[in-house]
Amino acid sequence: MLDVESFVHSLHQPRVQASLAVLAVGLTLVLRSQSSRLSQEQKVIPSPRLTLLPRLSDAETADLPYPPDVLPGARDVSSPYGSLRVYEWGPEEDLWGRGYSDTPCSLPHDTRLFATAVLLALTSSSLSWTGTSTFSLVGYSLGGGIAVSFTSYFPRLVKSLVLLAPSGLVRPKNISATSWLLYSTGFAPESLLIWMVRSRLSSSSSATPKSAAAEHDPVGELPKLDEGRGVDQTILSRSRPGVTATAAAVAWQVNYHKGFVKSFMSSVRYGPISNQHDDWRKVGKKLAAQNVNSDEKYAAAGLQNGKVLIISGEKDLVIIKNELMEDATEVLGANNVRFQICDVGHELPITKSKEVVKHIWGFWETS
Image (cartoon, rainbow, N blue to C red; front, side, top):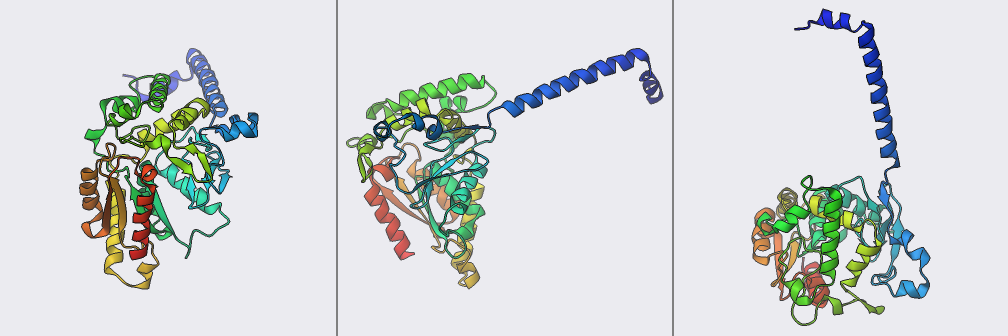
């Protein structure tokens, strides 16, 4: 066994010193190479706002499946994570890597990044959304899970919370084996997984209503369609009646937004889809405190409605109504939540927009 004194003495031997010098040079070269690779790595993938729109005529832009002016009040917010598209009539924003928002490559698309997106939209606005000017937050599907997470950390900013078929409490047993494999990490090369997900998104966007409705997948890429009038025939904006909620919009993003598939995969891997019970319980505790105290300090602490409104689809194959009602009641508290059910699937805010708006408006007026 080599003791410390012998080891120190060996360091002064010419051969050992030469070997250490070679090793040090090698490590330096490796570190420099790694540093160079990291510095050259693309940190943000630009959206079609920069990669496609400048090459299109006005007529070609207007004919896109998802035109940049289909929703009112559009503006683009610059940030260290890339540009974020915000539509200030709510406000609402494209998620990272969707629509006309860039894709931050080096960060997981989790609740931290999504909360940053909300704060970027609020703080970059010329309107006051904070202080005494709190706002009502409405979240649909993955947006519902994001809304709960945001509210759990910033309850003072949120006057009321409305969730439409929200993610966050999806039971793991409902996630298909295919999805577990596609959105896991480490078992297959990332390039192969990206190719597989891209192919799946492309095939889903061309699926018929029957085949789309038959896919029971809580992380499905497209809203499921009911019998009769489906998502493809639903007008997105009264000012643009020719633009509908068509699956072609997804296909367009797959083909022309270079960061779409990566953002989608990261959102499924790290986003608030399942196991978000702790954040939901935080909101429940906040509501419970509001409901037993009438002091001004509690009235000014957010969530003045005293309840969360959850609107679910009776035929939803993505967010199962009975499971959602059971789990949400358990984490929020029976006195802190109100449910409304629409006779429709997961696409409820699209095909049943008037009914959904009626429920939301009634909640705001009576709370």
